[in-house]
Length: 69
Image (cartoon, rainbow, N blue to C red; front, side, top):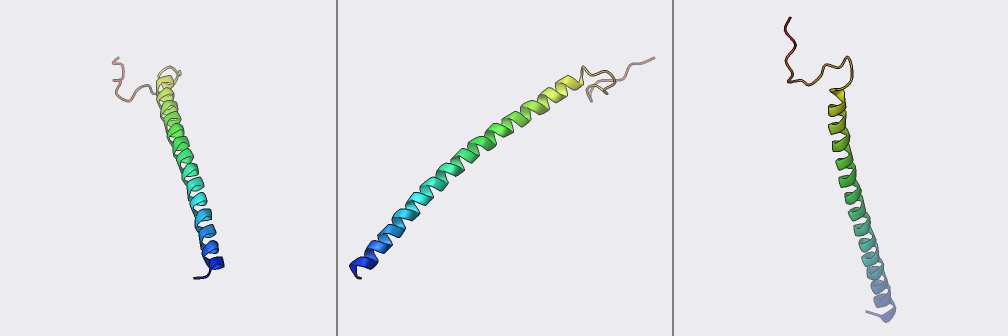
């Protein structure tokens, strides 16, 4: 194998390794963001359920029995 071709292959491998490292970092950051957004969604759902108990005209909790007359 000639020297020029070997250098070309080494440069391509170095570039691919750099690209893979950068992609791994992006994937890690995206996973962190997904987890953060999931936690926010859970909190919003929890608070929405809690606040629905205080809104006039809402049905209230699903397990609450209706008043008897």
